[in-house]
Length: 226
Image (cartoon, rainbow, N blue to C red; front, side, top):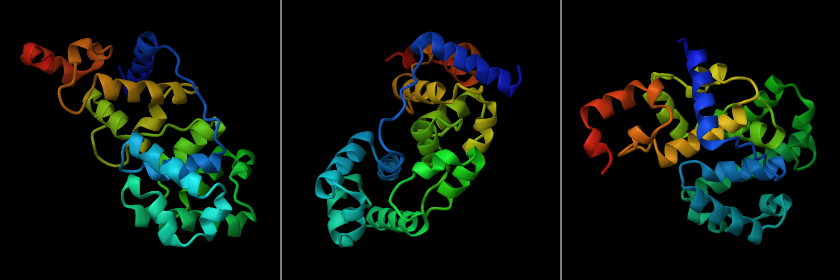
């Protein structure tokens, strides 16, 4: 089974376990971008709390851009690295306003996939994961963001060797049209089953495809289930 076939088999097995997970974001793409910037290197809970405080303090992005940076940083303190994130958010907002004349990313919907990704990746501090989240969830584009859960599962499955950018390794393997559902399914699997410590391998729908899980089940079946 080659890597594309294995990824297709992963998608089928996760579909059987979790069903279709295809919720698109109802947020404007710029809101989604800022929320994703806040999510970098922090928990979902801290991200959501920081984002809620940010929007409470600054109901418009124009207000956030015009605010003293210390005030913006204080609003997002809960996300950690608040001074760096405040600077990054204002740099991104300033770039969008200066280039587009308004604080909106709606124009990306008119660009080809590659050009839209290229533009987002040119923003300060925006990497592939952040750009692909915006394109996938905000525009329904065929991009596959890779977070820590997906990277861990892919490495255990032997789909990524841990070197280089996992987006480059995994994106071409994902069946077209399955990007959003598979992204969400793999995150759910990584959080609940294929955990960093104490993975529940014998309960994993991907065990038939997973060399790491097979070795664990064969060598330590009892310890794994504690």
